[in-house]
Length: 155
Image (cartoon, one colour):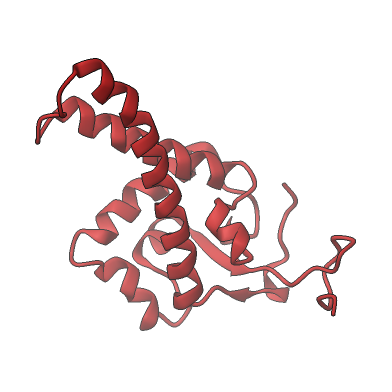
């Protein structure tokens, strides 16, 4: 992935980030449900509430989804749909270890009633807690024309 020139791009706003997140979580939950079908079928019964192994498996699915997409191209499917990209503060791509750390910190940001995410509404740089802690930012990419070049969107 290329190095992003940040001064040409604006930071992603809260609404765009929220919409991309909803899109992504719908996809993650769908994958979790699909992968749960063979488990339930093999048990011949429902998965018991509080099953720690099952919960850990669901967490692993979310970790793989987000860290793989963030580290490979800087965009989840939801971020791609909303023209967002995750980059380091200097514009360089995010590594796998950094993506994993960001996922862990995002979980911490969500714990106090989502305050770590809402923080971007008051932050001068529109950064959430996990953006600040990992030195990452989400930028809004320019619209592209049919040939894939940045510029004015086609009519």
